[in-house]
Length: 406
Image (cartoon, rainbow, N blue to C red):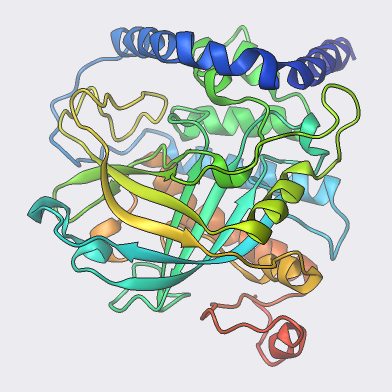
C-alpha cells in the first residue's frame, strides 16, 4: 500500500509537470542539456561494463535468457488478462493507437556499397502501413502517459525469402522516441514487466536490490510531453544486420514542419490530442521522414547485447537511406483504426540481410508472436498480412473469410 501511495504521488507530479514543460521549459532544456547529460550517462554506463573479445555484429547468448523471456511473456499475458476485457485486448506494449496511416518508403539512389544491402540494395518505392502509438501498458489520456511514442512501419510487396514465415511479402521497422531502450537486456526487461503488471513501473528504476538509475536518466531525457507523432524522431534502439557481418541501428527523422500546439495547456487538454494533431496535419499537408542508418564500427562502444548504451555518432554518423512519405489523407475512420487489431508488427518480418540482433531482439521473435496470437485469439480476429489494397468498409467481411489464428 505504501508503494502504491508513493507511486501515485510520483504520477501526480509527472502529470502536473507535463502540462508546463511544453512549450515553456522543455525545448530550452533539450537544446542546452540533453546531449551533455546523455553523453555523461553513457560514459558512466561504459565504465561499468566489462570488455569482451567479440567482433562486429557478433552475438553472445545471455545466461538465463530463455527463462527471462518466459517470465516476460507470462507477466505480459497476466497484464492483458487483468486489464482488458475479452474481445477488447490491446497490445501489451506500444498500446494506444494514435493513428494507422498509408505511406510509401522510397529507397534512395546512389547509396554507398556498404549500405546497398537487403531492402536498400536498389532504388524502389514500396507501399506501407504506418502505425503511431503511445506507450502502454494501458490506454490513458495522452497527457497522462509517460511522454513516450513509437512508430511501426510495415513495408509491403517486398520480394525474397523472409526469416519469419507467417508473412511472405513484408519488412517491418519498429522504433521508439528514445535512442536507448528502457532496459539493457531481457533479464532487466523481465523485472520491468514484473513491476509494470503491478502498476508500479517506476520502481523498476528505483528497486534498491537492482537499481537502474542511468536507464531512468536516459529515458527521462527523451520522454517528454508529446506534441504530434508526425513531428517526432524515432530510434530502433536495438541493432539489426545490414548484410553479412555488418550491424546497424536505424532511425526515422521528421523532415516536415507540422503543427505542435496543444490546445488548452496548461489546464484542459483533449484526451486524444495527439490523434487530433495528426488529423489536423494530414488534412493539410504531406509529411516526410528520413530513414537513417548508423553502422556499428566499435563492438564495445556500440554493443549488440546491451541496448541501454547510446551508440556514438562521432564514431559513426547516421546516413539517410530512404524517405518515408505519408501523403495527405483522411485516416480517422473506425474500421481503419480497428484494422490495427488484425496486424502483427514484428521485426522478424524481415529479409535475412536485416536479421534482428541481440538478446532483446531474440526475445521479440517468440514474445511478439505468442502475445500477438494470444491477443488475436482473445479478440476473435485473424492475423491478416496486408497488401495496401484494403478498403475498410469491407474489411470485416474480408476478415471473415480468413481462418482465425490459433
